[in-house]
Picture 1: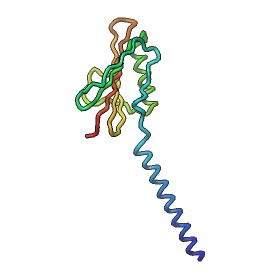
Picture 2 (picture 1 turned 90 degrees about the horizontal axis):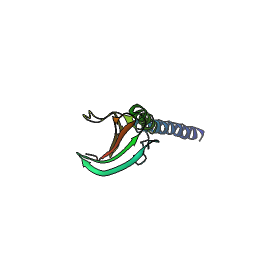
Picture 3 (picture 1 turned 120 degrees about the horizontal axis):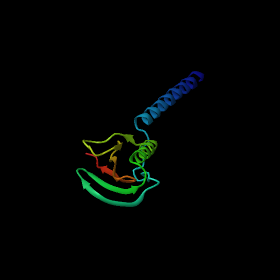
Length: 137
């Protein structure tokens, strides 16, 4: 009787250890994805305009544009810090020479965000944040 209880207890510990290992490895392989519906809004944005969705290749794109008196470097630093803190992975997709920052959320559907700045005149920065959602293929 005691040996069967010990065997049952031992098997329970082994099963628990396997379950904990599996849970830990799954969380490492599939980290929490960022929420694509909650992109950060730049604090000093003015004249905000949103357009889309627009079909661009295989993706649906929503573009938010705005102006600010802040420098392009300040805007890019804000998005770099916030997007990474929110769980986005840095890196642009494809050949995007005009994109200054790119972020991805590797999931299905696949999400990626581009941040593009220009400075048409000193003291005025134009910013485009392009949110893209691509269905699984």
